[in-house]
Length: 166
Image 1 (spheres, rainbow, N blue to C red):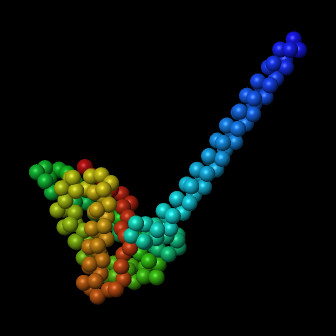
Image 2 (image 1 turned 135 degrees about the horizontal axis):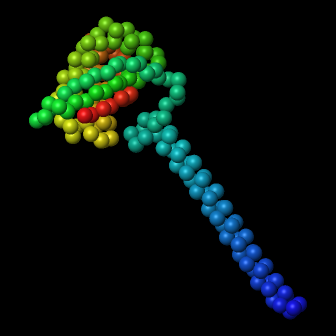
Image 3 (image 1 turned 60 degrees about the vertical axis):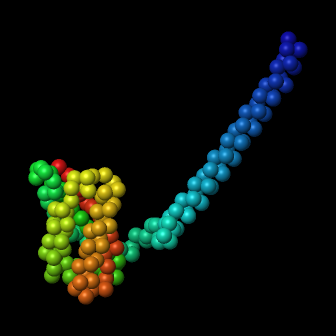
């Protein structure tokens, strides 16, 4: 019996040290991976491909509700429509000026938005890529209206609060 114990003891010790080594390697790999993810995340957050900040401070912009627009989509069947509610993302320093201008000329923005959206087909508004394109188009259009009226302020972006296609 003693002989058997001495025979099993070295094997158990080898197995235990092997498990400890594997656990240590796994722990090191997890730490390195976590550090890599942290560094990569910091780089992604710091800059986008074109050099702009990817994430902004929470206090440097204001969201101004714009309202809801419902339009028939262009196509063979007039039964398809888009209903969307948007908000304007504006630099905090210009928020009051944008609010005042919207108060005076909201109908100009609504008219532009309704005519632009009414010219869209169903495939122009379906899917994430189409929504991002539409988001950029609306932002650019609203900024063009501001420039046409002599404003030097800009809307940073528009955000969809609601987006329904039926």
